[in-house]
Length: 278
Length: 183
Image 1 (cartoon, rainbow over the protein chains, first blue to last red):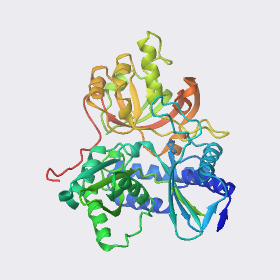
Image 2 (cartoon, each protein chain N blue to C red):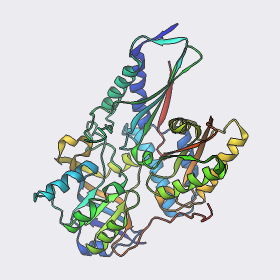
Image 3 (cartoon, chains in turn purple, brown):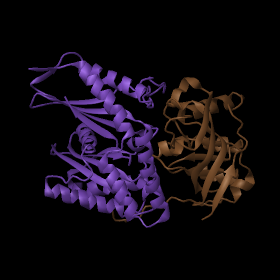
Image 4 (tube, each protein chain N blue to C red):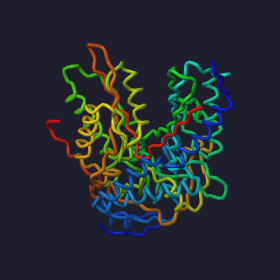
């Protein structure tokens, strides 16, 4: 059994919280650059110019890319031949406390009813799976509220099938319009149960924008949905244009014979995530 | 599409000339307020007390900035989604508020209030928080400090880059999604 020290987890998490909020991932940067070149409309082009300049400025100054530095969401994969010599959840939360304070990041976590800020951006949202191996992999996402608010879960009838799923997603994106800071990335979870569909839709957002789904049939569905969303013409920040969505990432899992759970997790263009393996 | 340099506080004349799609560079003092601060301001008004800043001609920025690192006036400071303030905005416009700055759609009540009280809704680029912070020269908490990022701040801005999203003539910049009725 390989032992992992809580202090190492805390340090890695604090570092990721700061770095992810300041450095736009390279795949997202490439996608914004490509969109800048693709757009003809002056307003759309100007938005992408500003976003690229913003990314450059954040990298050079250490300022956060966006003032909404998110709820801290983690996907943790703990190898079954590894163990944490202490409290895994507390080690992560301590990393969040430290990272958000030292990085001058915004505390966005509050009581759902009184709306009182918890003051240190904890508790983090932590999804843990036990996997083969003796490593600990931690993926961090800074998930902003604006795009999260535009996300939805629904339970379709199995007869509605792929056409029903597509209709639900495209209508959701159309209704959201400029609100979630388009161009967005769509994490689509299909299958499982009510809560599992939502979880896998969020995890799908961790995939690189330019990766291709290993199953060619799913890859084709991702492309089909991306094309339909971009045909809406909403464009960057709702100003009109060719780029409403940068990528669709689909996660499929078996579900009950009676059900067709569908979750759409909307991610803004400032798709901030990092991972570390300990 | 026209371009304007405007100075706060805004007047009826400033607002009436603006059309959806116009570019505005705003200078002067604007006030930050988002969800929690709006709730507090309305509670004060309900009790017959004053708003923490003069509403006449005022511009409210829907923003909750990140803390200012040493040597900077403010941290990242881009707009938050505006619809959450729709329930409060018409009341503030009726008391003289001339503009709000945010991102995303407004409801029909807000659009009607913009017409009735000659006011305007500006959009700033969401997710460009670091870039927009460069236009904020000073920032000071003036009310509800205990709300942290949601406190009301007086912000001195210079050439803050805005687009007119909803003007006071019923014009709107956002495109309508081309949704196939069969979809």
